[in-house]
Length: 394
Ligand SMILES: [Zn+2]
Image 1 (cartoon, rainbow, N blue to C red):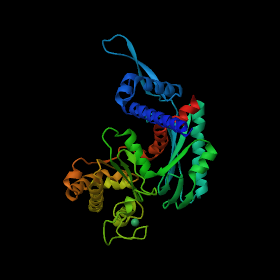
Image 2: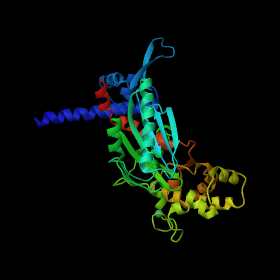
Image 3: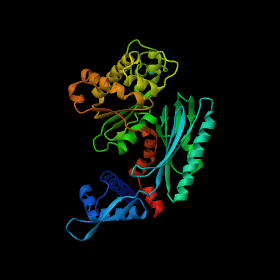
Image 4: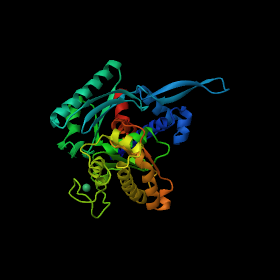
């Protein structure tokens, strides 16, 4: 009897893996014929065809007609259904809440944001976020699109596995069980991760899939964290808190950090570091960017020094992980282009040639990697395991 149960479980597992492989290949290639899918994935045509039929019925995949050059007979190509459903992405940072709806093609279908202030209580901020989520769900309903889930990116320590915000130092929130709260309220799956991880995932999923396999996304703002994609998967560490790059030790002396230690990377490279080094009462990044463009004599040496410390930390990451892509983003993005050259030359000088050889260092071209990646948490979970969705839709 046990054998029969196991066999059935094995079949579900194989089916899950095959479905996931087909969806991933379609997302990577855009369109493919059934026969090519089977061939590339080493499945029999029959197996591939059965799975495609389920995915078609569930509305996750659609057929598009094409005409092969010269052959005359039209053939059918498969692609991921753009309207198969949408993922809600939410980002809560120190000054605003952003909510988007994104589809499997990476298109942002809906977007709204609301400013929040330090004076607002935690519960008031969460209530504001809930109103925006309710708005996007209402929009989806009116358009006839199915909501697939909600992904949430937060700055701080996030227990992704249990869907709990453990500690957000900039917001000063502790122990918020978002997954439990929102799954009860909205009745769709909820996923959480920290904003550096969602940024890495968002960048990786749609910006650079073909080239990046080992990627570090450095999100630099008031604080600093790294989202690590290793071997094309987000790396969370043994209890979920990997990526605290800001607290890598970069000096034996140095300024006191919010963590209580001295000489952390974030005390040398961050908006707070800029404020301290330049003795500014408040930081207007656009104005600083403009000053750096005009080679301002006060700010340029400070930016150069920060760029060198940025490069020093990146050299450590390159030596340790042999990553192929380092992406710089976060709130400090407006001034990062002025630090890029110096950071790159420091990495060249301070890392080993062999791990450095293939590493590209760039500033992200978009300011919404994090909220977009939050939506990708939902899309990825479906890519990994489409079975429940297919079952509920058949
Ligand atoms: Zn620290």
